[in-house]
Image (cartoon, rainbow, N blue to C red; front, side, top):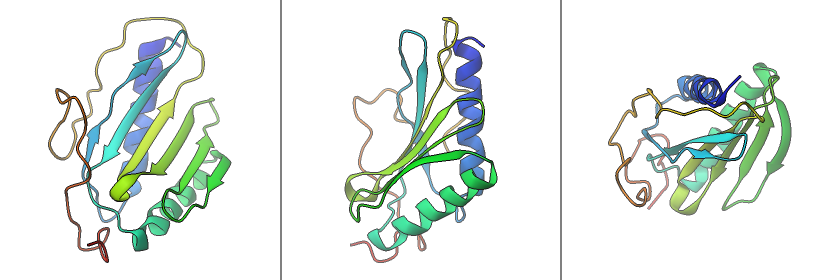
Length: 151
């Protein structure tokens, strides 16, 4: 497997978890970073996830990853900034972490693979793209379900 293959696999992992999130959340690509023999793909949720709904999102993702036979490596139960970390059978690290203002971040880290060029993801965000922005803004999309209870 080379870096492009790993990037494609990371995109599939991300696509699969987003297909499980109901009601749907709006997301955008985060930066892809490349190490000496690995890479990380990221997606940032632009839907506000209220403090009251963070456990629901984490629980939904946890159940899906377990059903997919991912190994749960750690769970951070912090009320403000919870997270879950897992690993796929083929060695990809996956995580969901909640940041400031309820913004959720997914990351997929590849195992060490052969060096190659890596194209941008072909997956289209289901909202605005911030590919040319210096920073992705804080979550700015309200959802009757996910944002319930948020100011």
